Amino acid sequence: MPNLPAVEATKRAVHDTRTRVLLSKTKMTSIAEACGRNRMTVAKWLDGDDISLAAYIAAQQLSGGDPIETLTNALAAENTIPALAEGEVK
Image (cartoon, rainbow, N blue to C red; front, side, top):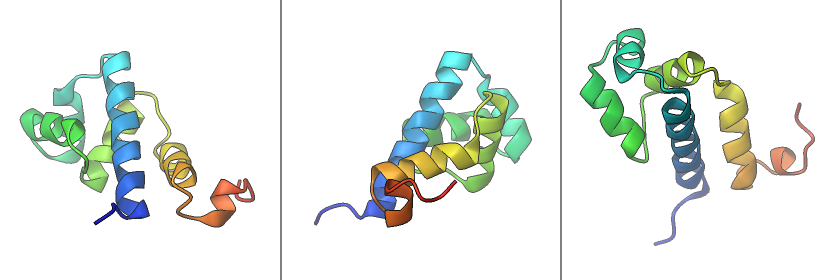
């Protein structure tokens, strides 16, 4: 069974977030404190394909990212929302 576009977009957003966190040297402990989890859970989520919304937002904000822009880019890359792929949404 092929992966659904929403699943692929989620994977892309989590991967992009993980890359940002690692490049910015953001501490897992900081992300964990911001989202009410422990650092091992956050690290496990970032190494996987899925993450809680609170952890995603915390990871993006603490690493200097924009959670909405990252998600929009992931959705557009997977053509999940045609208007995003065509650049109609700003």
